[in-house]
Length: 238
Image 1 (cartoon, rainbow, N blue to C red):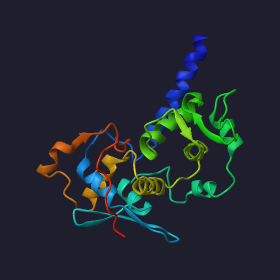
Image 2: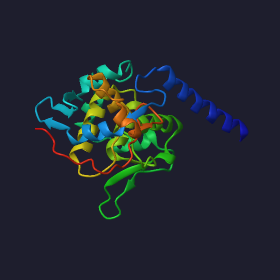
Image 3: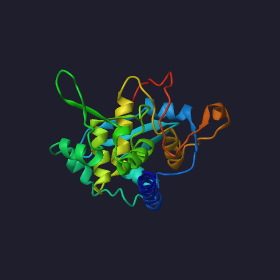
Image 4: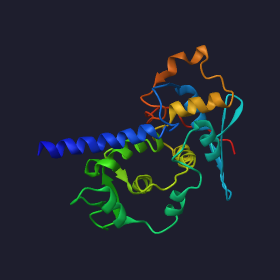
């Protein structure tokens, strides 16, 4: 039994090392964010629906683009997340329910389903195999941050499956779509505060003015789950 435990620990360590060696630009040390500007960004975020949607916001007199190209350009170094995006193709095809269960979950573990309809709801993080478990931590801290990390919903499970199967993923598209989803909702958490602060700075916004010092907070990762904030509603520019 002890030998088995050592092998398991070594396997998980190897996976972790592979994540580190991939040199992802979206992994980084804790960085501060400016909540005043983050709230202004979300309040003014808008989208133009076209074959290639346009994602923009408006902050301190500047137009801020947050489309996939802009985010990928800003993050840089996304060697394993290329815009050749096999993940989007998977999203538009049949949902691989059985494959996800087989590849991601430990033996004997299954999807959590709706008791009445039988529809799949989510998978449990603690029931993931070692390799998917490590990648789930990466995904939930960097790509699709959530406050409830133990339940991985259907849509997020597909992304995790794509990553674990070595499929190409456009990280910028994932992040811009999630920012847009949050911006169009009435209530909720504000994800990616450190990323957005840096994105504003990237577009020429002064993010560290003296008036905003009280609203600067460090984050546990370059991109990390936001906290629920009051007063985020506002008129979005169209």
